[in-house]
Length: 454
Image (tube, rainbow, N blue to C red; front, side, top):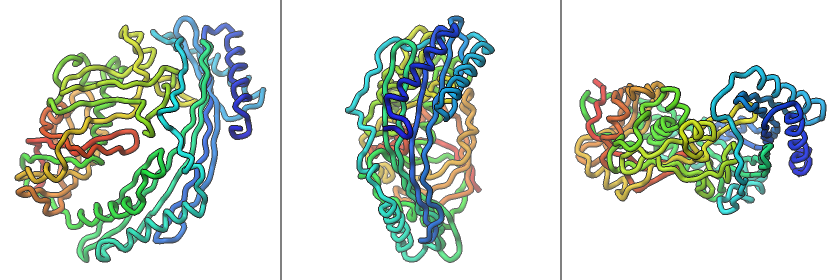
């Protein structure tokens, strides 16, 4: 069973909706059904702040006309009158849409790949008591760490859940996919008697055994305590060492620049750059939707196209963009399996698992080789990066590196550069590739970046 309806009932409902759409004169249709459930608990200074359990389900139908018009409607009631109304709204929205080039359905096969491992039975077996235990361990571990500098554990939280989806089309595709995930996080307030900081750390995974709750708590404390007393540094060019958790934020921005809609709409500095040098030779950026257990993994994308591995940047050279069916048609290529869509949205293009390939140097060896540098642990305002020019100016926090040793905390500074220059100034990539959600990065070293401080 899946919620109030069995898998077979969902399949029959979806088939009926498609038949209704086609009977009304449409050339094609697809249906996406999704359901899920989750539970979470959060403690504030050891006391329950939030305890929630919930579930959701819904269905969306997309109508396609032969001239490229498309329309969508969605809802969460599966009785016959409600479903009929959804079909009618989808047809109405389609008939009133503008024709677009390349709108089509996938005519291949929907192939499920059990080797990608999306669901951990240990997550499904978690009890409320176990979730509470996890939070108490995180709270106690954080409170007892670092010689009493922690004033408060503002949050020790745990969330887990599962999701299931069914996709079918008028071209004959139909299939189910199901997955689970869990996440934990700790936020603390720390003080050294003169200065106070609030910070935290969190992780998420499809596998229960990848979440080390004590390590998460200690990392939250360490990051917060080491930021105490941060001051601006002297303005000038520095070698920037970027920790993985901060680097992934930059990688996300770069990955979006390779999505075909951004290229076609003139919103990416990577337009017309395939085959050219866009980064230093130590940069290889990959989108891979088939890495076992990862958050962005799936057997197929939102249009039923098999996911795959796409080289975006190889040894510093731009190699490929990311496509769904529509934009692949426009560029005369095949879809890379990167269609993304919710029940209420039309297909778009997005990254799956995005990662910057690791190098061979350890973080310790990287830092020890830096004479005058800035260890970057936080960047504020990355959403302000101009995707066309690449120019940016963002706030930053971190730690000063002097003669290969991390010394004092730094705050109240600004980093101004150009994203293309930034990529080309990367001189080293660490061996510590780390996933945060569906994005992964190692430690990065970027030379000759101006830090504006005092």
